[in-house]
Image 1 (cartoon, helix red, strand yellow):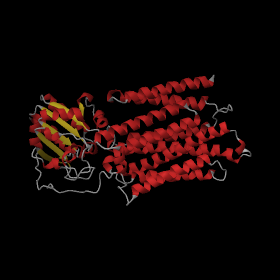
Image 2 (image 1 turned 180 degrees about the horizontal axis):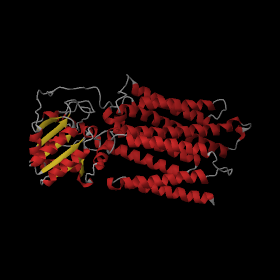
Image 3 (image 1 turned 60 degrees about the horizontal axis):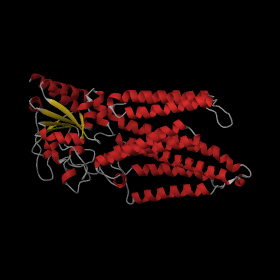
Image 4 (image 1 turned 90 degrees about the horizontal axis):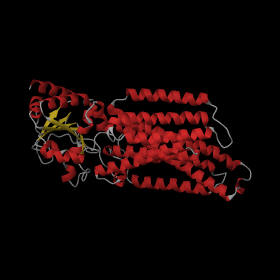
Length: 480
């Protein structure tokens, strides 16, 4: 009876995961989708704790340790989520994802310790072939979980460090070849241990997670900063696959479903991100996109010099425009200026100006960063235009206000074959009648390359912190 109830609970929880994931596709429903999925997860956890029985009829009994761990983890997670700033959200997502990978790897290690008892029992080699076949399948799942989970954990930690600036891009000559060799060694080692069930070899298993941790570090180290959104998405899919391995090990359907959903969603998002950047996943993983260049000159490579605009002139241009497009970037997030941006939007609309937002898929430091940021300020979701739709409207736009975006509006992606971002689809802001770029300085963006847009005849630079500049624009527009 208990098992039937638990199966029903797992079914309900699986449905909530699917429904919650579907609702996350729209900002207006995302919060409720999160709550529904969280409720399903809570139900699955409680059901497992109180109703689970193994094949021998044993139930869980160490409730103190279980609820103690849940309480400590819950407190740490809640405090971290409440205190994190929107600018630090990408690294928090990466770190939390890494913790999921670590859990999956630890599950595999613990299960191997249990499973290895078979090797120490007399007569293990006389086990019937069908049981040995099951053993091989079980071991393969354990090895895969240890490998993928360890890579996800180590890679996510490095990504976290790179996102918050504590770890710089690092590579050495021949690193990609070394990485491939290391990967081949790990896979070969797994195959060897899988078919050589010798009691004297089973402790070599621990080399799998250790080598995988090293691979995870070297895997992410050389990847340029501008590719971090893709890497985070890819590592997220790794964690999902590792969690699914845990579901196989425990024959836990809800864990399997959750892992498959995360793995599939992460994989699809990775593909979409690569498409948005017009880069193959191979180029992301072995390329050197970003870093290196530290151009700070006020003069372009062709000798052109940028021009500045005052706050009052910018306010006049936008207040008397017919249509204004706002392009948010990481500078907006750093300044926590989303609420000021929304206030400026409302003031302009009161004056009869049509205001929309142009959103690039890889703007910011994680997938959907700008959407989340603007949703926090209650910006109408219908005003957020994806790149294709935004590019159709720039030709009829009077003023484009760029707030901290850089690489996603860089014309070099279309005009300079030598540029590392060449071929990447961008927001074609230069098609508008006037472009105003708000930046703190002339420093390059995350890809580390000069932006010719800043020297374009239509472009005017408005220097300063995004929040301060927007507040000044609001004051000026109110006087018009």
